[in-house]
Image (spheres, one colour):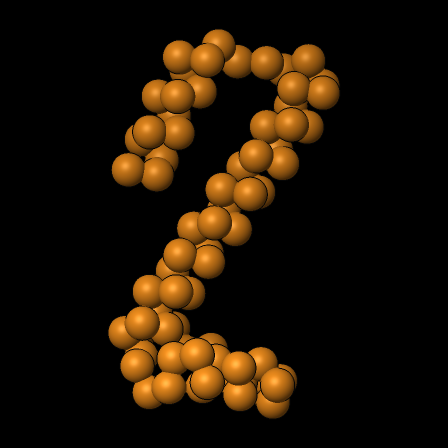
Length: 70
């Protein structure tokens, strides 16, 4: 289990207003945020690879994405 300490009163208040005491919804929202963050980073890396001429065939890309986010 991972515990996260929030040292920003405004952020903490925003979280409390949004989720109240519903830890389950907060956990789900955080998991979704992390997933979106990972996808964004993967896209950034892909763009850098394309710019460097390190292209990959689309079928290989789709297979990797499917296995990674399934």
